[in-house]
Image 1 (cartoon, helix red, strand yellow):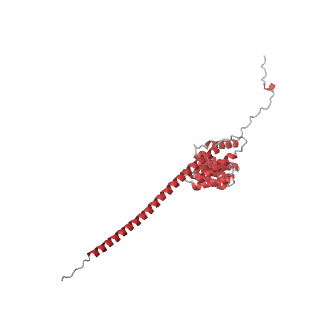
Image 2 (cartoon, one colour):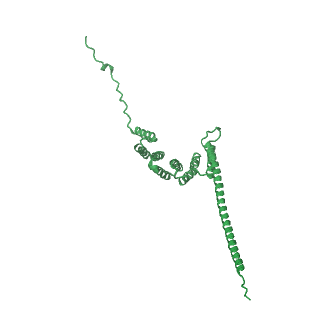
Length: 258
């Protein structure tokens, strides 16, 4: 009787199917994991975009509010008093509050400059110096306003008796933009020397203005100071000599004999 050969193909097929199923399951799990990571990554990106948009909208809102406050501050700064009994200092104080609030929301060079000016107008020179110095540190690239800041800072320093620092500040002003503001620095120096009684030094600075900046807007002031000094030093014209009284009869020629 022939020996029966057992077929093992079915088992092999089962094993193959199990292997295929296992591989397929792993692929699905891998895909799921990749999808999960992809979803997390996409979610993170979306979150970042949402935060950026929200921040942009917030910044835009703050910018608009800061702008509105700055404009209101200008209206007080340049306003004419409507109530004659109200102290003029009130408008400067209101301007200070508004410029500060605006600057805290959105730091702008104009708000910083006018905040310093408001303190200056209140004779609060210490705070004015603080704001002008902060401007120079923070907005040194604002060349359109920077020369004015140096002038106001120097004036504030002179007001507080810090003369050496003031002159040093004017020296920095004279170097801005290749020296185009040097005439302003010279005039402010001259005025300072005049107030301290150093007349010769003052005149020296005025002469520099006329010599180096013939078209300077400060030329008229410099020329008037020099002219006044020259007139004061010029010798006074000698008073006309008054003729001595004479005898009219002696001066009259004798009549010719008839």
